[in-house]
Each structure stands twice: as structure tokens, then as C-alpha cells.
Image (cartoon, rainbow, N blue to C red; front, side, top):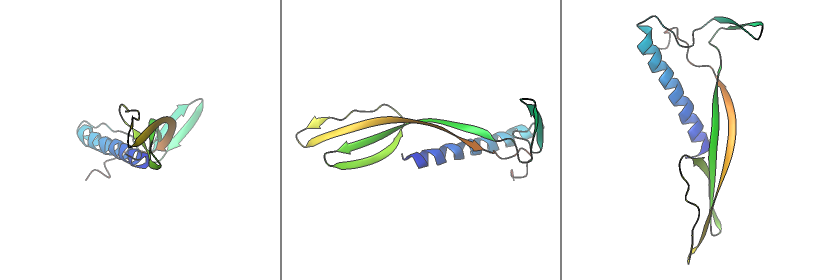
Length: 116
């Protein structure tokens, strides 16, 4: 899986999960990510009209596989890796690199506006 597809799928599933949870808890009058939030943090009053941004943190292993004169590209490492093997037809070399980053995301508001 390519990194861009992994990021897109992860964020999409988080948003889908939030929306489904909002539907479930709305019957109890509860909200996830309410609109027009005011709170005090670090001695400062903060206002958010569309919900407070949340940070989605990624710590991803990327693999790069090269085979005898050709490159297979870079993809997201989601499990164990088989290091390259050497045989009569050539060799394969696998490199795993790690990347860490976070993205601010404003989740759907819990006002019920988007639920139907």
C-alpha cells in the first residue's frame, strides 16, 4: 500500500467511525466534537466554531524493495518484512525506514447536521 493511500484510508475510517458513534450516542443527548466550543487551556480562553482540531499522529514504517536492476517503489510497512534473498536469477534488497508526523483534523461536529 502506498503512503498516500494509507493516510487517506486511515483518516476516512476515523471520520466514518466518529459519524457512526455520533448516531449511536445522539439518542442519549451526548455529542462528539460539539460546535462553538469555549475552553481555557494554558491560561488562555480558546473558541472553536466548528469543533476543536484533533491531531492524528502517524508513526509509519516504509519499505523500499529493489530487485536486480529494477525498483519496486516505496510502500507502507504493515507487518513483518521478509528480507531479500539471493538466488541464481538475481538478488532482492529490502530497506525499512520510519517516518513520524501528525495532521490536524477537525472532525464532523456533533450537532446532528450531517447525520441524515
